[in-house]
Image 1 (cartoon, helix red, strand yellow):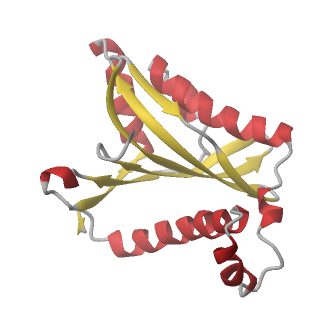
Image 2 (tube, helix red, strand yellow):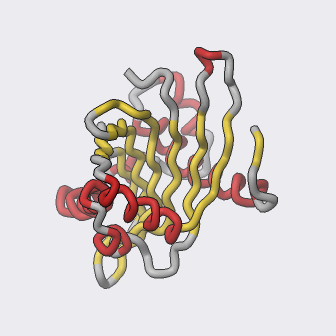
Length: 192
């Protein structure tokens, strides 16, 4: 993996921790008996309790994600910005290239929310129709902290562009659920 930022090792560790918070609980939710011995060895009584999200909370959390993507489709940067926690600044992407063409390199990219908003702002005036279709929401919650794992597909001017997974880390504030961190993967192979 090539890195474009010298702070990458530190940031990569943080990404791995977030992934661990999502992947290990997802194993606990699975009914795969082979995973049960691994999970029973963990120092937690049960991962299933983190998957218990009431319908009102699920609606509030998924509403934030939907508002983010609606804002992207509409080119509405103000709508997008209000979905994020006030102090969030960094976003992360792991770009998977095209193994079917012999390119097996992955690149970790880091950007700011400001850069992201600027890219979105420029789409609408250029007449670019952007749609990110969320395929499902996997939500884990512990009090006012939640992670949301969302496989997705992106279409630009109705043409399929790429797929991947968005991972949101969220917190509940006085103003409702807000995005603390957003990471995603992008690939064109193995999407459908």
